[in-house]
Amino acid sequence: MMPLAVSPDFVSRKKHRAAVGALFFLLGLCFASWASRIPSIQQRMGVSDAQLGGVLFSIPAGQLLSLPLAGWLVAKQGSRRVVLAGVLLYAGALVALGWAANLYQLVPLLMVFGIGANFTNIAVNTQAVNVERLYANPIMASFHGLWSLAGFAGAAVGTVMIGARVPPGLHFLLIALLITVGLVVSAGHVVRHDSGVDPGQPAFVRPDRHLLGLGAIAFCALICEGAMFDWSGVYFKKVLQVDKNWVGAGYTAFMSTMALGRFGADALAARFGPKRVIQGSGLLTATGLAIAVAFPVLPAALLGFLLVGFGTSSVVPLVYSAAGRSKTMSAGMALAAVSTIGFVGFLLGPPVIGLVAGASSLRVSLALIAVMGVCVSAVATAVMKGGRMEVEM
Image (cartoon, rainbow, N blue to C red; front, side, top):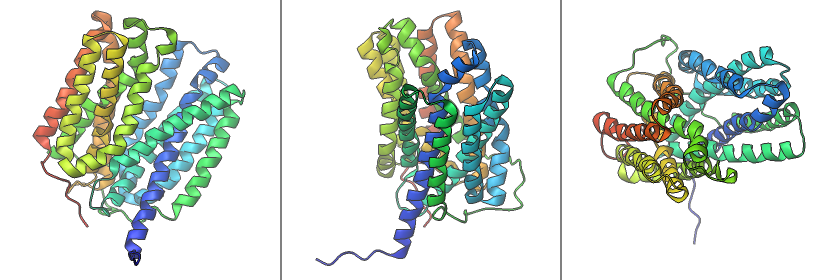
């Protein structure tokens, strides 16, 4: 049987996909490496938990402040230049964090780290939109799955480094070198020209109704994600009162299914359409949280958190994919607009949960977060078109 001929375009798009996928993985590894050594840096500096909470806010502050600039740079310079420069900034900031001697150095470095994270986030998602245009089916969620997979890899490497008593500075330097090598290998295969890049694009453009709706979906979904990141361990410890070895089980369950769900979300979106997948995802998130709240015992809570991971896995990637296809704004500006709205939800969610929990209980707080899952489905119904994804070839 004769082998099938492979066109140069097909080979090229595979190389584009591999290169952008590698960048997603490297960026996830960078962030996870930092997260894995937070306790080490806290202990070295003698920072209390309360102080640490304030210090860590420097990262989202840097991200939020740089969102409009990131979108403008991608629109003006193209995502290729921004992602290549952003990765170097991100990795360089990671190394500097490892050698920070005090809070006066740590806080501004964390802001730079947040800026690097945001530049790369907008640029690499614009790259993913460009690559997705070359395929007949959605592939955005698989890129985000690689980012999640890198989180597990980074946590594992961090555990080994801690066990071997490797200082954070040396650990981060090794990771930065790995990222640099990966960047050099990938740089030649990232997409060179974004569709719709306009050098005259103003820095601030008012999003249209469709983009505002996508931002609202991201807002609700990221409130749910933020709740899982910051409060899952607290829920298992204080409400379920599990053994200390099981305190992190809810977070692990959530992260595992979120990563797994992202590798299956593209196939679901291709078959049923992004709108239906997002609708189902919102209801799945609400169902998972409702189970965890209604039955505060370990097996039910684990099942609930597993469902929440599946529910949240596909929403942001599919929303980003839809935003990147905006007809009224460049992909970079559209992604920045949607990210800004969604990111506010990510920031507001955890403190709101704390305030509600203080006034009533943590179970009531998570029940309110379940409503956000329903809102994801409702807003998707209102603002997204039905059917399968339309791909511009």
